[in-house]
Amino acid sequence: AGAEAPAILLAAESAAASESAARALVSEGLGSALLPLLSPSTPKQTAELALRLLSAASKHAAPDLSQRLLKDGVLPALLPLLALALGDAVAVRVAALLHALADSPSSRF
Image (cartoon, rainbow, N blue to C red; front, side, top):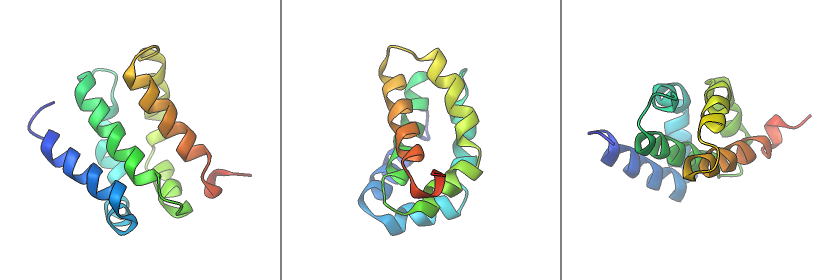
């Protein structure tokens, strides 16, 4: 990953440890900001860091966090990434994030 790696790691650790940190990141447009890092052309390590941060933010039991990430457009970016990464660690991260987003009360019918 490039120069953004330490910042993404720090943000992921903060979001995982604190719902209020996750809420602050999501309210500032975390999903939209990370969309370019979820492109199939993004280096694998960078995409993994972006997925780690999104997963950390979505792990809290706050339905509005997952709903905001979905509104930011992360789902359409994750599906092609999953198809390209089948069978490796990125696919596992994508599948875990999709599961967390789908399991949110805000995305249930």
